Amino acid sequence: MTNAPAIGLFGINMGPAGEPATMARIAVEAEAAGYESVWTGEHIVLPDPQAPPSPAPPETPMVDTAVALSYLAGVTSTIKLGSGIIILPQRQPAVLAKSLASLDYLSDGRLLFGLGVGYLEPEMTACSTPMDRRGDRSDEYLVAMRQLWTEDATSFDGEFVTFSSVSANPKPPQGSIHTVVGGHSKRASRRAVGLAHGWYGFMRDPETAASDIAQLEEAASQVDRPADLGRLEISVTPQKRLGPGDLEAYAELGVDRLILQPGWHRGLDDILAYVEEFAPSA
Image (cartoon, rainbow, N blue to C red):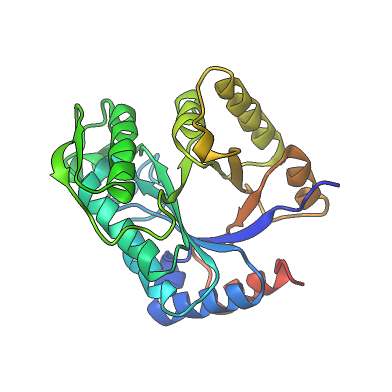
């Protein structure tokens, strides 16, 4: 018998949902309804005026991921808190490692660290990050951050990151924080297999998710996977509202988590109705 995917909720920090009382109410209701996780979206800045491939109007509120999830950690007790996704090369790795370790510490080990390499040149430029080699930069950042999470008096001498005999405490309760790589490229698949606990596909129907999973399987034949990462976990945000048979279709593909998207433009009442409609405990 195929296990049903866990159910998460995307966009907890965006648009109308990003208003503090609204954000808290949605997270509390999702936890009570049996949702496994809530997930932020991230863009530090957006092009103004909006131009492709920018995904949202520049006036769209997006509360900083670590701030939003720390706030939600204080009003919830069991639901997992996911970043969907943090654009890793735009961040200073030691500072981000500290921020995420602190969030994991305050939430008693509930953080799911979703990361990606980014794609918006104006945002990269605003963050003083070159588009070139952002994948290489991300891979090295993640390795360096893991050392800071799990070791004391640790040193790292890389191309983009260097530190010598430093410690960062408190350590995250998880040890090495549960990490999920977002992206649909072959490079993202190799990154997920080689460096992360899981992979996250955004806006994927069952057909495109099947293609993504085949690509991940190909990557697994090419990249060594550290044993401590365990089996690669598959998370997907569906492209459209779940219909009859969709849950079973994703389950048959081996999807472990569906991160549903009510829509960042919706108000509180509409989002709460969506939470109720797709509640795992319903």
